[in-house]
Length: 173
Figure 1 (cartoon, rainbow, N blue to C red):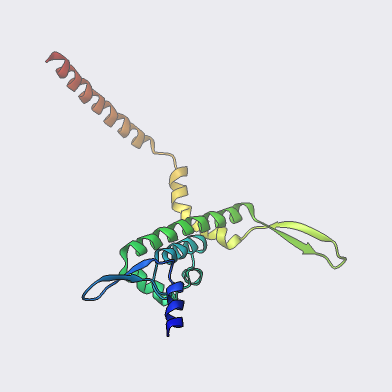
Figure 2: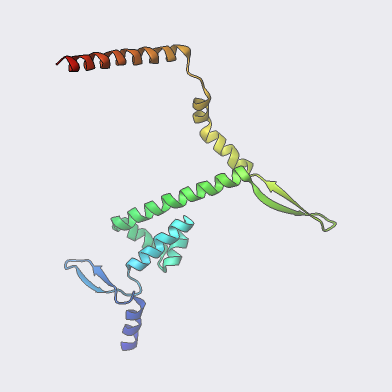
């Protein structure tokens, strides 16, 4: 029994204390099963690097369901996870864009044993990107109508006249 208790004490993070809820909240030593700051940091770091909840749970030494429960009940942890996913998503998006624009090197081995290096481009990703950004690209490429330009000029001219009149009134006072 004493041996088991000693094992539990060692499993926690070097004397780190955790808050235990219930009718009378209190602090106690962390056990192997408790969420500690170190486990949270490992989880969030792994989530940032992998964008994968299962891999993050494995890296922190917790269960996926335990991490889900923690996200539902702890607002600070949930916010950290959301931020980590945002960062990981941006990194993933950049990697996919890079691969789409620059391709990946592929080595083809011929039957005579010679090798040839070619660049392979993922057309499916490129087509998806084109479809997603088609409207924005069309907006950027379109020229404004001459009537629209005249309307903008007229509005700017009227605004300048109002500003000049206001400045004149200010100077006369």
